[in-house]
Length: 267
Image (tube, rainbow, N blue to C red; front, side):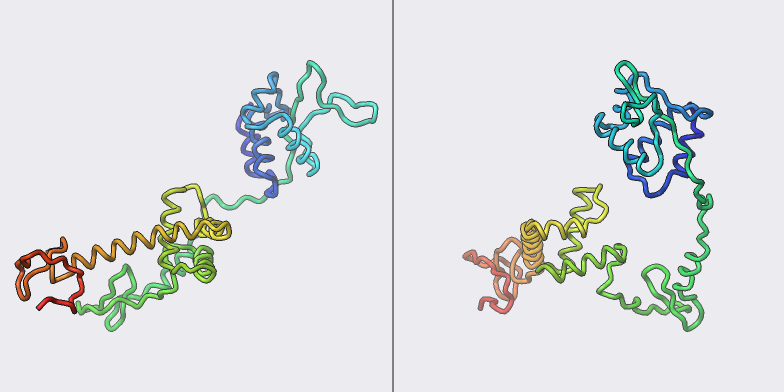
């Protein structure tokens, strides 16, 4: 029992294995003898517990591995038809970690020189008469401020290209704007952090007819926010709806409720 076979499975088990097949191999490798590669489980329930599988589930995974050419069960005999028998009453299945073809391992450290070169190429040097794109503020050497570089509205910098494509498709297929979709994506990330592709999840909600209710909720929120902003910006009232007397900051008497429409200022 050791780590040698465990690491061997991690490094050299075929990439096309399913997660359950790889899990079984890792659990067996952790238990197996490094020299004989044999793993013995006196109580099969302990193996099932570690795998989180039923006996039938374990049997199916073993059969799938055998179909790939990696039989992990050690036969103890054959039946009348000549098929191998792996266990019988009073004797549990013994397992052996198969030998895998060696796979070439990636280097221990990734060579980032190419990526760094691209990043450096995208940055403008700060020389006289040139602009700098570092950070979000753009300046000329000499201290004269100039406007920031124009952004590209169609791009969402914090989303990968695949997610941006999904956002574009959602905006095309639904009545939602890109801003609304991005707001929904942030909500999904907060509510369900285990979802890797929130835009694809929203597409599923759309196909199931469940996206409209979410859209209605964020639109109502945006509408209330806009109404509050209009009240705060209204110059004709105190912000709570009490209209001022014309040309003053004194509430009108009797009370007049403001509708926050400047063009309708009272005489």
